[in-house]
Length: 81
Image (cartoon, rainbow, N blue to C red):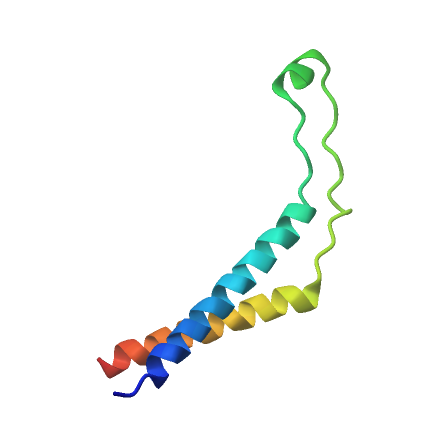
């Protein structure tokens, strides 16, 4: 029995999950904390500028490439069924 397609799916799944984890970590690092409800009721304040967000473009591109690769593999698997 040929286990190569199963191993490829597992590797793609693992790469996909790793990319999602990395993306999630990157997004968490760039979150702006929201003021608590009690503070915002007592004293209005202007929204904070969001130009301080920075993304590692190479990491983001790699995550997108991994997702696209995963989706292409899924499509080719479904086409073979």
